[in-house]
Image (cartoon, rainbow, N blue to C red; front, side, top):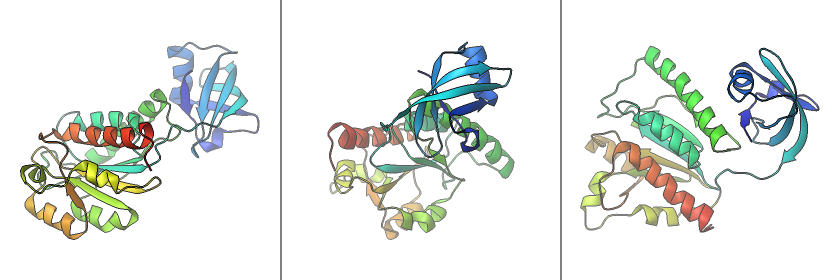
Length: 252
């Protein structure tokens, strides 16, 4: 059943109004008719099965049939702070990270980021990324769309880091030492309900100065396995590992 995230103002006492691109998707792409059912998600995370009662050119009217009480959200709130990367790598992280349960994403302008955004480019990209997050959330039946935060530097992340219970950064130099800390060791310290920040560097990795600053701010440097991962692979590796640990094994 197709799922749509609907703004709070479009929820009525007994039904939901679906407008704009979603209404076009229902009528022109899915070719649904009156009597067909869809799932509507409220911004607060609740979802309901709704029956289509009327389709016009830009509005789909529905009648609420049943609330869904199951949640598909992760028991761990994970924010991925992903360094800006070339091409569509960041988009891949957003899409797959959403499927794997990330709660939020922060684009990071790292010292070694090849990509540099100005204000105009940032606004355009963030609008596109918001659409990717929404579509990925609908596809994988999330209850909430992950948050997309403004572009930040490592210094910005450190200033905001008091919000998190656990702060981790993937550091390729950690994989080269004999006394490295594994990602599994860090995950074992996390409890259900924790807010976790995972910082992933750009193609060239973190600079020595960035690594020093994060260590001083009590970020844990970890290796993600014995091999050096591409920047777009690292976040996916981390989220998949945490999903297995907390959702499949049921660890707390």
